[in-house]
Amino acid sequence: MERYDRQLRLWGALGQDSLNRSRVCVVGPATPLLQEVFKNLVLAGISSLTWLKVECAVQSGSLFLAELKKDLEPLASKQLEYEENDLRKTLQQPQYDWTRFSVVILTCIGEQTAMLDLNEIRRQRGTKFPPVLNTFVSGFYGYIYLVLSETHFVLQAHPDSKKYDLRLQNPWPELINYVDTFDLSKMDIATFSGIPYTVLLMKCIAKLERDGNNGRITIDQMKKVLDQICLPLGNDVIYEPNYVEAKRYAYLACSQNDCCKELEDLLRNLEISDYGNDWHDTYNYEILTLLLTLKNIAKENGELSFQPLTGTLPDMESTTENYIRLKKLYEVKAKLDKSRVEESLARSKKIVSQDVLETFCSHYGEVRKILPPKSDLLGIFSTSNALLDALVMVQFWEQPAVTAEDKDEFIGLRVDDNYSVMAFFGGAVVQEAIKLITHHYVPIDNLFLYNGINNSSATYKI
Image (tube, rainbow, N blue to C red; front, side, top):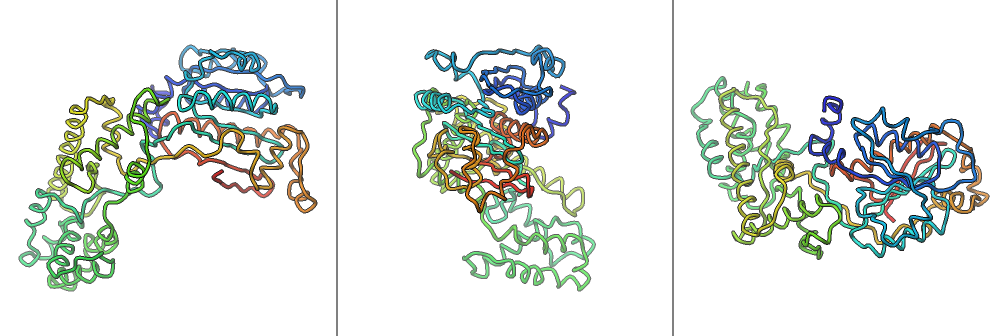
């Protein structure tokens, strides 16, 4: 596992284990794009690959690997399971097991018949068909199109700015007792400087509630009350680091813990099967099971919602003793919440792996969902995007249908063998496949377009 140290920092041991056990099917002709896709998949740790070959009249070029399996094996961490089949023959086999694949990647498919047949097979298999990533590159342009057969849940989204679950407006009894141990009216500035800023914010909230403020708290209100409770200690208090932090993070007290409201709305408004056999990806089923479990806990206890505490605290100015006491409170509460989830699962006789349960509870605020698109694999044929239309025309009819106004804009559409762009898309499409397999990071939803002439990209929903 030493080889994957950097990858473990991205998606953890659970994600890497999912990659090592995954099976990926790549469909397409022998092109540099296919080469890059295979290389990046193997380097990530995927050790089972299936290539469904498409005959192509265009020469693959000297860059393509002559003996694919032989050249890929040194990159793999263990024996590479590799299989080659003809796409046309495979599509004619009704019993071919598509469900064994974690992801299907289509690279530069130029046959309409093959796309139609694959789309029909996907329709017949329903939610049991794996997610499909369709990618095509021509000249300086390209696209990636994701088609899901079932709702995809992201276990850990890794947002750019981490939002800590502090429960400032919804403290539990032990946390309230801890805050009450600090009497600001009976301490000097030296003692005050060792108080965590979260304690100061909760004291501000408590004062606002005592003063009859039952509405939504604003940042200005928090800062004003903070001055009221702190300045009596002396004017120099404004220079204390914990006071400065309390001012800076006053916004944390101004919003309820609604980071997962969209997930609750999803469960409230949509009918999603919680029957395990209806799901292709076990992780999606397990995450849904956990979300439904939280809903049941809230219902059983007459609560509007139940969200397990993550149990992590940000760094803050404080004495070591005060910080450790506060941190322990959050850790104990997080363990209790996790126990409630485990007990509810046991009562409902639902089974969820321990690794998924722990990750779910410790990163609940990062859970996301992506719904299957209304369109299917043929959705790329019915859009109003000029660049996508031009790419599809080149892909299936080898002739871009561009107007006179667009001709100059798409001047780089027919440049042959632009390896740098293909290398970029090889990495990009594998990145999306890894997101789907590991359930870390949010995949594209659901079309990515790249314009290499002006070095721009955009994501669309079709």
